[in-house]
Image (cartoon, rainbow, N blue to C red; front, side):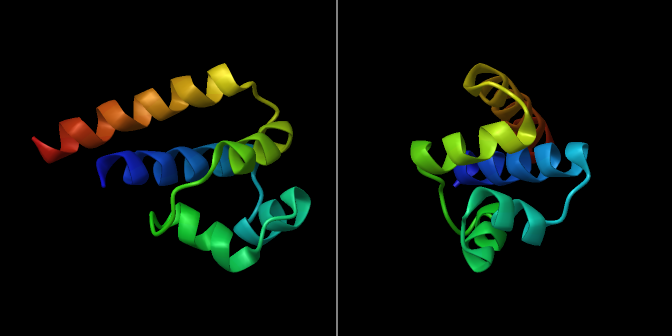
Length: 81
């Protein structure tokens, strides 16, 4: 559960950094809008394939995505203490 929440926080943070809506992110990445919303709400866990579809839109590498994910994990752990 924590991992899924960290991933959803990571996706939302990265999307907000580039200043686009969920709808636009879904459209540009060719991912279903409802699924994208579920990813950000922590209802779904993205596959590696899905993450790789998003990386060019976020303009980051997989390593940078993983670093942001780790920041999200640390934040959520602190909040749960």
